[in-house]
Image 1: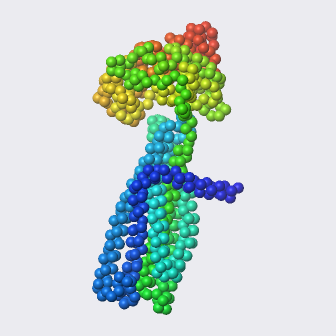
Image 2: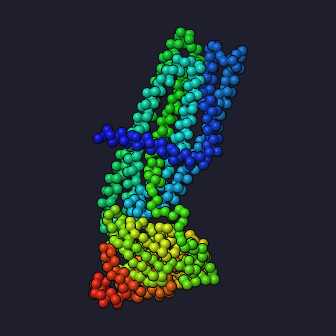
Image 3: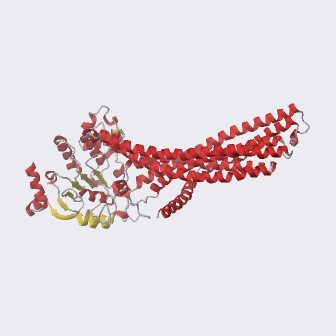
Length: 625
């Protein structure tokens, strides 16, 4: 069983390596001009490196008055040495210049590839359905988008191109060695075989250890993110010591896995260092015998001693770069797991929306002359007539339904409240209507058009959802109301005045330009909620959804917002979720849910007369009041 599992893991790693390399190719081809320039430097760089040992050997032969190459024949000792010094300095200058340029170009390509992958990964993550985020810790995603993506540049720049350069350099040196003296060349080449096998073994072990280290780093970041976000609960319930011990345990596991990667990396480097010394010793032994037999000039022996060093230098660099590649492959494999995550909710191809998408600028950017127009001024095609849930079944997990055979219709302009015990499925209805999740069975129709046949942008443009906890981004007040849309400051102020929140904004230190920290931590919960109302009002949506929208407001502020809502809801379809039943007595209809089923429907008075679940909930709240 264990051997089968190990073979499967090896096969998976090999397949993954090829798959990951192929995934990098399109990104590399975006920078093919820079790559071509960098690769052209391989020939002069390799030749310059291979020529240098020959020049040193010729200097030794010149000093011993041994046979020399054609360009030194007939030269005096001083002339020959001057020529060799000039040529040697020229090759050094060529190597330094081209090596620096090549390194710069390759690093530039690597950074561009990294940036492109990061952009694609962010776009893909933001396109995934909410179901994915339910099961994926935020800290793990942050690790994939930051440290994992950063390691990808090394796969290509430091790793792949570097290995190509090293292999090309070794090939040139090997060819030149065989042209000079085949016995010494053959001995050095044969010594490469066991070294290569040993290097591959250590690198495979490094790959396994590095993957585990990355997983522990994800767990470390997840724990860190969770504790920072929940710092209030941590301190209030005195969990500092407990959480510190938990973090320390995960940190130790991470360090243990990193230690393994360091061990295998060091083992490769140490092995190659010793093999390089053995190679030089072998050259001295065999070359010395040939020199004593007058079969090899002493200058050529000096040349091959340098060849032995130069031949194993690329191999040492190859091992280091292979380590970078393995670390990068581990990161790219983890990133690819996210990129391969299927996008569950997609727009139809081609669009099959039977009613034309709204092109009315009032839905996205109100005209200054009518900053917040009345719904009746919207064109008929942009006003949804009815919302219908048609025998809808839905569950967050397979076969664990939270909505069961839900069937109801909300007529155009109707104000409907959703009521029921906790877990009855009220918020799930909103998420399905906005298509944050895909239903299991049935249909949700907007104006007799299935929401799955409607572009998501168009669907969500037709409604504004105000949740119980309003989320704010880092920025100023006006940008948190506009949320990237091209609204003018006059339109922002008009929306704030319509929702009665202008007075609160004007009391802030810099008014609409007041900077907000991440998640709006410099505002109270009620103040953040007020901005959510202005954010909804400026978009002038045909549908308003309020999910416990006034729960965080004090009585006075709630009364003020309620007045604004009374005006905002005129002519619009509205879905309201509220646990305080006294706030929904004026709606047109109340839908009562229990365990995902619709059990009652009617007005406030009608449901009280029925004496069912709604009446029981209402009387219980009145007793509590």
